[in-house]
Length: 304
Length: 270
Image (cartoon, rainbow over all chains, first blue to last red; front, top):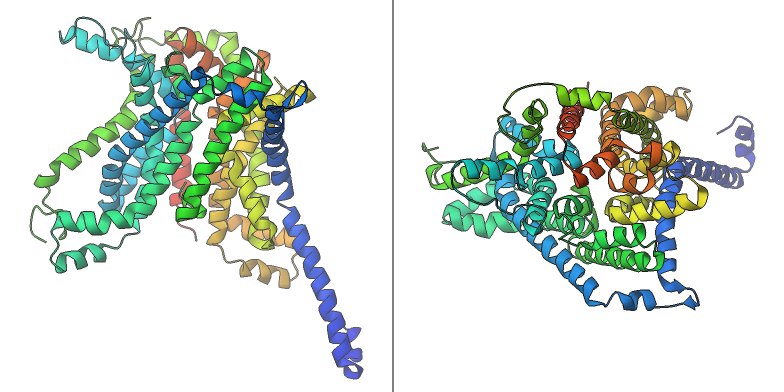
């Protein structure tokens, strides 16, 4: 309160307080605006560079030489595109499944380790995340290719006569993608498992459950939110993944994302590329939205 | 607790030894392939063999001697440094704003910040390529820095926001009631206390830019090709052990950054 206003209060307390409250409210609102404005540079940059072009792509996908058209989408019904869609989903399901099978035991053991052991194991899980994607693809090429290390070792040991086809195909792509995705499965699972109080398991044991029964009926259901988060993150990342399938698939594994790249680079066909892109975006957002309604969106993103 | 039992509610260690074996193999699967690259980079042979027939540093010499690799490295490091500065400043301001303003716009802002993380990378890439083609920003350093910042800002916002969550905002109020202006209070009271998360965010931004592949494939060409773009093309064509040398250097950078990030976060806040 300012000193000028002080004498006025004695005469007309009610009106002046209202005036002051009004001033305070305006000042507060201005401050809110200024504080909100601090987020503007970041919001504008993302809006302008990441979001606006995507809206533009949406528009391009419906806009042909003669105005509005669905021709670009109709073309996507061609068997070639359907095959790509099938490959994309098959690979994504397979990679997510393997990540679940490998990630659940790993997260379970980390969650039960001593603090020291857990930090060491987490560091080992984080190491690949911080290692360049290309370095990891290169490593798998070195191991899996025709004259790669695995074929050389097996050949020298006399186990195989002709080199195995391990890479530049579906197998190599799956191995490489599991390697990239596994940490994204383990981290949310670990966070969920760490939050499960051991008291629940003790209670189950006290009530006569065998360890195995307690695990399946108490621990697994409690870890489900983490599992759902991990599955969704991995699946959605797989759907739009480009780099690893492009390098390890050797052109034989056609993912939806590679179809987009090809349409832009070789054909400069923006209508077709946009339609492909919109389909990928809608699939991704639909999955996130559905799961967000089921378990809460913050939960999925929060665990990243 | 009886001997041999993992915890009182579990089966014995022996009965779940398969679990230890499976987890050990999984961890090896995660880390061994990348580590294998390191000895290969010191091989004296053109051909892949492990252990290498002899040792040399010829692939490092080849890397440092090649102009195109050197140029690409300079582009990548400059882009990463500038991206780190831009996204750390913008991201920290945004996180602070979201914490203090509490307006209804917060929900919208949250969605905008999550968007670059959930929109498939290939879409962001062709979108930026399309936009830059209109304004002539393809194959420029500014273009690369802005594009990489879009990917890095959300990570900085998330990291700094989690740091601010544990920070007691009333400390800043005290400073302001003692006469400090809001920016001064932020710089001298708040920032020093959330520095751990700001540094962690900055390191994330650096590695995000340095390792970014898909966007760079589209927008970083000519003499502004990034290291990742050159590596991607090299991996597609023919595999030269020079890549092993570059990979080893990149692994060293990752280990240093991961170590830094762990050590700032592990240090107790006083």
